[in-house]
Length: 295
Image 1 (cartoon, one colour):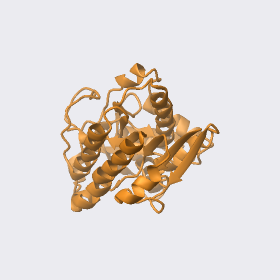
Image 2: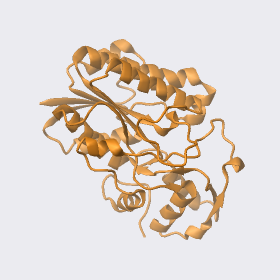
Image 3: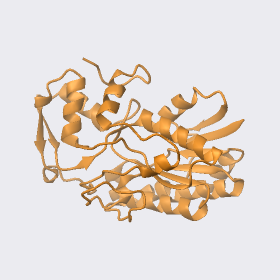
């Protein structure tokens, strides 16, 4: 029986991964939350990885602005922790699927970034995640997979969609930036695709390297907020467009986070659906339960 380890199993994506994997009786799954496994501890990582066929690493420092304040701490998890996992996987012949981010890219393009686009992170969070990507490429050239995602929302953690609907109960109008472009992605749908990639990797159908794990199409934070309000039965005109310079943050954000997805087809896997149809699915999904209501 195939043994699969999920790290970061207590987070938004990690919990969705565990839910998806519960439907797979053919897999023996180990779910390790932060309290169970510190990825910055090489000895603990080696012990945790031993005996597994695949590791999906959803463990991460996700506080983007916090990374700007303490880059060393963020990189210890997002970079060196990934290197620990990759080294342990290399020792045991284990495949590693590393969840990364669009923030490793410059974010100044005007067409979707292909998987082989040059990296040029604009903030500390992106630099740390790039250290992790480079470790996977260096240590696992034949069995390492990097899946970059972006604009994640889901049932089990703080995220933009949940924040907008919470603020709707407190304010009549919300000003939301309309000059950052990206691909909102439901964490549950990403979890399904990561498991499918693990299957394809084990079967030899998916080549190692970088994949882009975001929904198709594109919108802005303003567009996403309006769509979420509409699906929740709220007046979308309560959302007003504004610009990023009105909301300065410690960490600069990329203006363009739209990714291309050509490698999924090469691996024989279906593309991600459109972001809006996926948002509709998320709002109407009975499981996992979501922190929003449906009109």
